[in-house]
Amino acid sequence: MKAKDLRELSRDELVAKSSELRTELFTARIKHSTGQLENTAKLETLRRDVARVETILREKAGGQS
Image (cartoon, rainbow, N blue to C red):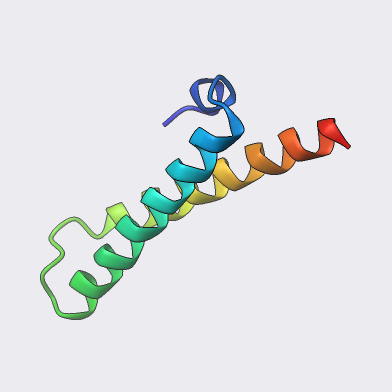
């Protein structure tokens, strides 16, 4: 997921995307702990995607104040 693509989304869409990614990350962590996650690199990718979305949300909030 590219930051450029995320910047085009509205604030509400970014909040929904963040929630979706956090849920997916939680599920992946559970699978990892039970040994069912085959692609462990997915954890890092999801963490970075969540951080990317949160950063852009902060950027948008800062521009409105």
